Length: 301
Image (cartoon, rainbow, N blue to C red):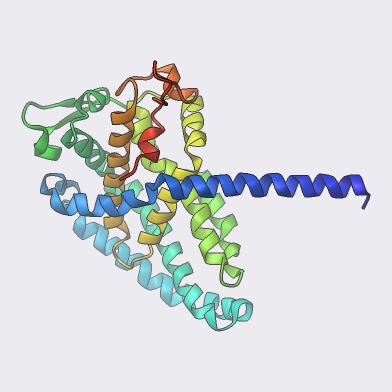
């Protein structure tokens, strides 16, 4: 290999290393990984947003049991054997995390398609309303009269199209990433982080819809907060590893995503509206301070 090619490879590796370090720093500094745990505490303490979960708790439990038990019976031992050969003594432990991850993916996929059907949107909207973001939610559904603290009781008819429930691309990427778990020690962690990178922005799909973002605007916003979405998505993936609780955490993580959206709106220069300065990068006020919605992501909690 010529020296020119070596230099090119070295520069490419250095560029990717610097970029990855910047994204990692952004993920840590954003503290967005705190929103899923905050969602748990908020959900537990606000009974007014429980109905969408309560009404579906039995079919959700049956679905979880019906997926997890067969997955462990038919897939754990083969995967544990392969991972033991690859990872040594840690193989059986990594296999547990892998089967739980696979089970969670199947459970969430089936639940969103056949059970939840708008329940997560109701929880997201109810949280926004409870936190005073009625003008934003009113762009996507009718709101009934009454206190904002009434939760889902205040929600009326939807005015927007249902969100996409199933993505073939997501399924394909999941299958492609599965072999990462064969890498000793770090493989499962890398797998969860990469899955978190893909799932993180999906928790704000309703927020983007209410903001009336175009595809390009959404992509730009996600790119501007890439590290924060990775941190948020990875934390949700970790929570989803808890047996039989993945669907409950799907609700609480949705609440956490709504709380994050509230913070973004509070720091936005034009809350509830689509404004160019909010989408094309940081803007500055008369004193030269950053007034972009990214402040809501970076904000100390």
